[in-house]
Picture 1 (cartoon, rainbow, N blue to C red):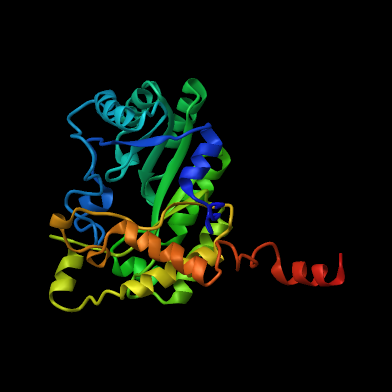
Picture 2 (spheres, rainbow, N blue to C red):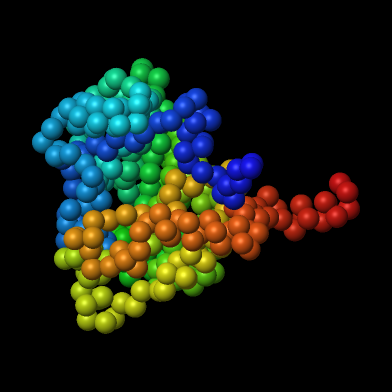
Length: 321
């Protein structure tokens, strides 16, 4: 029986097309924090441990981390191509010289074909982009810059304590654009302060800014965070799982079909959270999203018809011009 074609652009398939085979991400943990945390608060949902719960200690050198992780992944999956993923905290908050040294280490490591750098929109500046461009030219690696957005609702960004607005996010994307790097945006699809219209606007914004890929995840509640306090005192009411599934499908419908979906569901250690993915396995939620798209005949890009001067374009199409 012929396999069903995916109803969204799957990241792993895109990597195979790009590199001619499977490619695996190897987390890299740098000795860095986040300026939003350093300023005295940080994002309401940011765990004290950050996001790199699968990372090795930042006390190890970049090449030591990559060597240990590639030895394990390579043996388990017979892999020989890797993406060095600078994951935890804000990686372009390092001094430029330290960042350059880390980038050179990663770019020259055996089997590394790409560097992925996770950072904040308000920490994108020319010296760091030049460092990445230099590594791309000298070592022949591809570059992806990951930016946290979460939502296009600027009021929700403020409630979350993100410390930046939509203007800084757009400015970061425009700064990266001349370099030709791939870009990935992070989105929380079920923020309780957002409406479905906000989710749609987020898809439209990322499409208009020509992002390469998107990572979706649900709002989970890490311990020892402002969000945990809100959850405990009853002022935070999480949306039902069914709402997350529907919002993800709606988001995909409005998203440019050429944008790769790097993930549909995030993960966090159960012992570090009060609530994560409604206490449901991430792969089950992924299945729910895919099954809903199949059952209701919905696809990524079905409603991607709003850019390129839509009214004039539609008139020209109707007139056969």
